[in-house]
Length: 245
Ligand code: ATP
Ligand code: MG
Image (cartoon, rainbow, N blue to C red):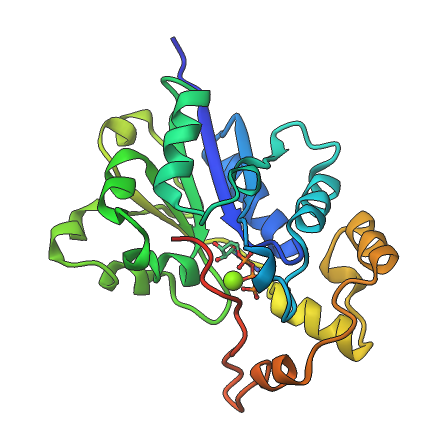
């Protein structure tokens, strides 16, 4: 019987933007995924100040962004669970929801480089597939150096033209997928909203309307403004709290 292929795309989604959607579309097509679950991470309300929109707003924006795309699903799994968003717990829950499915964790290079901070990260790597995609400002190959030699052979670069083969799924792998990624980040969207600079093309129209209606990202405390300082090298300093563990 054909196995279901389920993608997990986690993030703060503060807010979701066209870069997320483009990456998800390309991955879905390439790996013929049946579904991609977009899972906004829970962030305790006391941390929501400093530029992080309330969980339900972030979830709502994800819902608006995936509306009309039957393969994309907005999932409240982590927000409903409320506790810290541990990937291992999320993975176990997804496996219960989709027994027998192949599960693919989708993430950009920057997120993968933090994997060793995740709880039980080795188990997460052992229990599903990873698809790491290009993120402007990072080199995809960088990720092969992120883990020790024991993991060297898990990495499987996939060329843009290569067809995905089922036999690759016989063992856990970390696929490296070069994509024509959009140079957009939530940090940049928030900054533009705050500074009144154009940002409309960065998010779906329905998300834009929602941000306006709710007045999200308009003001910041002085302290946060300071934290949002961008260095001359363009390194972002307020990439958000590492919420995925
Ligand atoms: P922030 O600037 O607040 O950190 P972000 O744009 O990085 O926001 P996240 O919610 O942190 O968005 O990211 C969720 C996932 O999406 C991560 O795996 C991240 O690497 C990936 N991602 C974010 N933006 C892009 C993009 N433009 N292209 C490809 N992947 C992206
Ligand atoms: Mg980020």
